[in-house]
Amino acid sequence: MEKALWYLLTATRGGENRVRIIRTLSDQPLNANRLADELDVGYKTIRHHLDVLESHGVVEAGGEKYGQLYFLTDQFEHSRDTFEQITKHLE
Image (cartoon, rainbow, N blue to C red; front, side, top):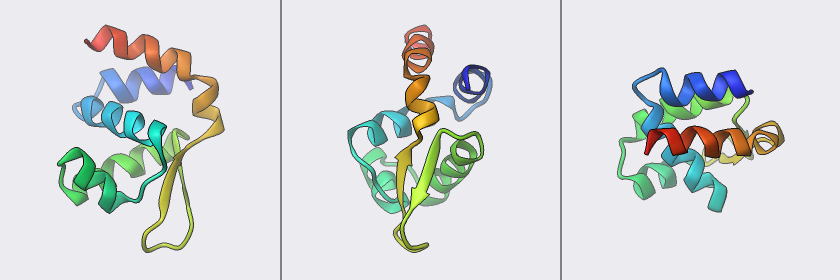
């Protein structure tokens, strides 16, 4: 997970938005539409980042397809210290 987080957050253009998504989901699970509203980012952009984060095991979806809530995975939670370390480098 550590290598995936470094890649997802620092080596690609979408790293800043992915950090914002993770921070927001740390507070509460949300669906893609609510995330787009909360972060003032387009819905399609949020969907793209959620798909990338999901494919790397950072987030997981729960519930019906429409309005699915996104949660941080247990795997991510075990690597939260790495996430915090990475975001310190980004500031």
